[in-house]
Image (cartoon, rainbow, N blue to C red):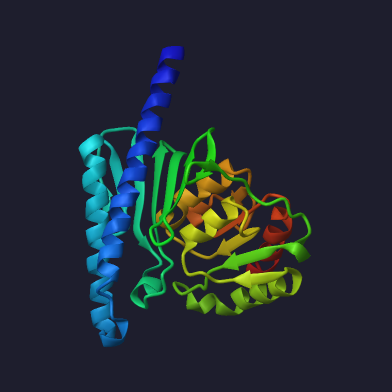
Length: 273
């Protein structure tokens, strides 16, 4: 059995290595196309078409690299959807998180790659190609930024905390309860941020830049890597209800752990009315 454990550990180390390489390849594709973006010349349909082109180009580079090393693994990609395989590992890929930022030349976007073994996340990578910041995590091995260990913040007073969120653009009918929650946290916390990149929000919680992040109805590809990052950095990640699986509901709360009960209780009170 010890041999099997050691063998599995080596496989997961190789998986993380390949995930890092794939994220770098996807990031280089994004940077190459970014130099050609002139959003003010694009009509709405043109902007959408360009985003699809860039998404696909980054995703293709990522998938080709993964399949070169692990041809049997399953893949869930934002653009291509499910790519079946016969392995126990499943890759979860967002080739461009922060599409609107990207199209408007707001230089904050990311590549997000997670790997699950069955239902358990075992590796996660979030890469900010502009800042050259590579966030990585392996199950049971901690979280890192450019190979240096990271940790969530130690703030335990909400008034000292910096919160992050994302607007519910997929569910605009929920804007009223969302604004109630925004106001509640705005009044309680030191300040609020809205970055437009859930993967970066989670990475920032993991490294202590943010103390809490919450958002509605995200895809698994948006958050899977960041979920592992936060947990391996010592934080907590749940749905709005502490017993919910955020990867299933898409509703996510990620914190340093010290203020988690406050955040989830406020969100439950507002969204369960």
